[in-house]
Length: 231
Image (tube, rainbow, N blue to C red):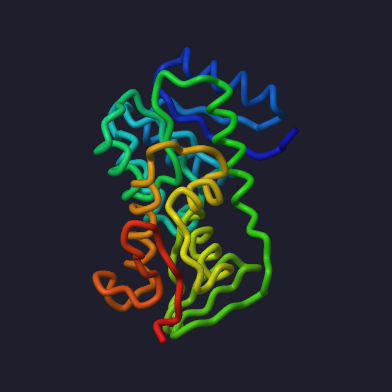
């Protein structure tokens, strides 16, 4: 059982009730919103541990809600799982590029939804192997879940922080996309290695001096990625 607080954002009442019922049955504290403006208000006031965000909302859609959340320092680190009836790759990738941590496509099974919720919440607590790790002009504080670059704090999503942590723990080791999918997302993500690429692209933009010529996160052609100190 869990006491984590989850905000469910969907304008379809039957979907709201379905998700709410099943989350509450697992012990989660559930809030609901039927539109983007109410979702933002609840996110700021309640600061939930996770947001399940439908894309097709009246007025402000899920993309805009996600963007607003990521721009607001007080709630920017809340993990977001996007829910959409669209299955095209563009919609998935666009959501990830805006800062979503995961996505699920309607129609979905309750079992799959609960597994993804559990996986995302499980990853919000990083297992600390060192309190602080530094490389170049970057300092990673695992206890505070913070990354400082040249004395300025960098805002990373949970998945970006997890990726960076995994790279640091496996410095010098080549890791495949499938390995990173299983390790970071916590379940099979068959055929969705694009998810890893999108998150790494965002991470590079935040920590590399030139994300087009990365110094720390190397692409190993045809295999995956490797973290090095650029030496």
